[in-house]
Length: 250
Image 1: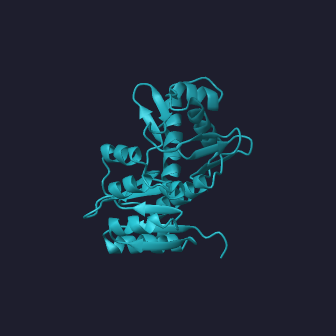
Image 2 (image 1 turned 60 degrees about the horizontal axis):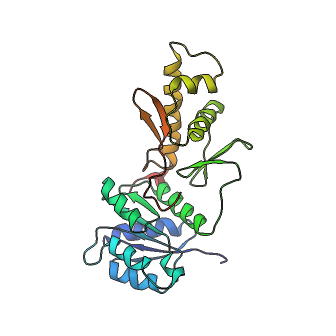
Image 3 (image 1 turned 135 degrees about the horizontal axis):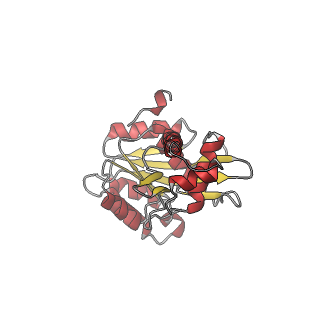
């Protein structure tokens, strides 16, 4: 089979490693599961994997140490293997540490199967050097192309109404700065702000949040800035980069 991507999954909980492996195999990936950090590092050093999904909390060599040693390898091609941490450790400090030592992404347990799949595909696409559409607005894996009136999250299409699309475009243009409900309403609806306008904006922001969460609920994409308005949560400064049965959590 041409162009099959090879993924290593390492988790000391065999059930989790095997479930994640099965999930990714169904997407057409070639997957190898292992259950200890030392074995993961040995396998990765051979340079035969396009991406690694690593648990953090493992006895002996944990996921952080595997990533540190991987990034220190002399073979640049091996050292640059994308790493996604998959862990129950969800504190902000752990995410900062993970990105600081070279992780490419971080998915917190419990997670929806689709969330992990879109993250894996996004990392692999990034490694191939695929670039966002020219002139598209792109933040946090959201790519909005005004010319084609299309939106994608982690390269998965997002179906939005015209007003939802325009609200998201305004937030993306602000690039992390808050946009007031008044400004959103007057720019998108193109009429004067009135007593009921704020509720209208709230409803559309709620719709946007719900649709983004259907693809990836592990991150908050639209943040309420109390007393000011709404903003797209910007890329973290420590980041390394810019419903059926399968939607269950692991």
